Image (cartoon, rainbow, N blue to C red; front, side, top):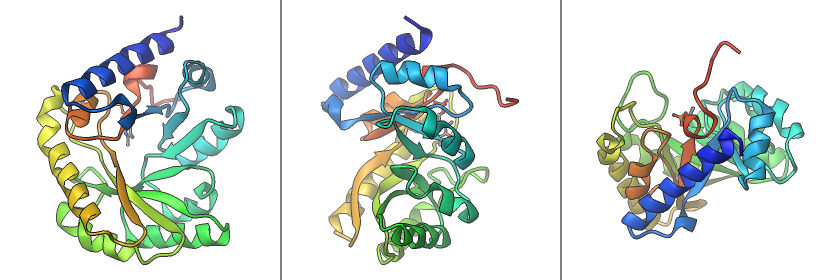
Length: 232
Ligand SMILES: *Cc1c(COP(=O)(O)O)cnc(C)c1O
């Protein structure tokens, strides 16, 4: 067994435990294998172990890797998206996690309508108001979702956050809890084209804490594929 398969067994075991501790069903949580900078060989090892969803943060990398993977492998864009790359990415990913401006939402909507599809998107929230991070602030989320909901060609599936880097995942539970609450509140408003059934939060260092607070998607890279080198 290669190291990816071993790591995946470990990650799934931890997801199972976190779900059981919080009385949740394991099927409620989707693992996104974050494969950015990693070669196809390792992604295929994950695929063979049963994984189908891969997260990447660069449009070019998705376009390069997608034709090399089996047809039923799905890609999610989890990184910042520039408006000028929208044309290339719409139709090539099943979910865009990182919508953080109306201009971007409009561009995705326009391109989706042109391609006669509806694109599923998440709104990225900057939960700790970190200057280094993208995403909109908590207070802006509701009016933002209201505006987005009027754009044709997109469906707002939920919220996403990248929590602060911490040495101990539980330190982020306060942010995960706030995001979950916001998601529940927005769902209750029954806004058009807005289902609020996806909460994408938790990475290698804090996915168990995120699951405890209600994550439905966790994005794990290092914990599956090992540390990344950015000079490749
Ligand atoms: C890289 C990345 C991840 C995965 O991070 P790890 O700490 O390696 O698990 C998750 N989400 C986003 C948005 C990322 O860019």
